[in-house]
Image 1 (cartoon, protein in one colour):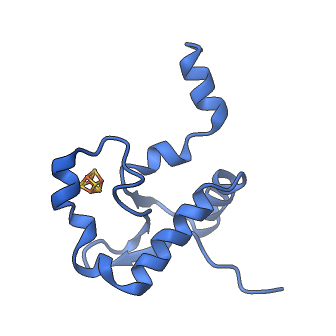
Image 2 (cartoon, helix red, strand yellow; image 1 turned 45 degrees about the horizontal axis):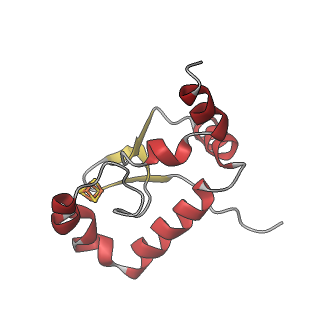
Amino acid sequence: MGIVRPLLLVGNEKLGMSIFQWSIPPIKTCPGRTPACERVCYATTGHFLFAGVQERLAWNYQQALRADFVDRMTDEVFRKGCIVVRRVRPVDRVLERPSDSTARRSGK
Ligand code: SF4
């Protein structure tokens, strides 16, 4: 059995070590972005430019597109006993199950 890469990472200097985090690439995954915020997006500067961070964001996004993503994330949150999970706002759109959007459109 190979090593399983976790979806969630434990905090950072700002968040602390008791907060888990999960993020995806900015701009292309932001449904509410504007031309102005794209130009000054905080997530296109600083540590976000590190190759390791870019690779992680791209990998997270690919995982979010998988049919088993929500089940895997839910399982990991419970297994790790996560009290707080920080995620970026655009994730709402990615995590939406097809049945959720269908139900919302039909008013159910
Ligand atoms: S992360 Fe925020 S600032 Fe950056 S493009 Fe998305 S909505 Fe705009």
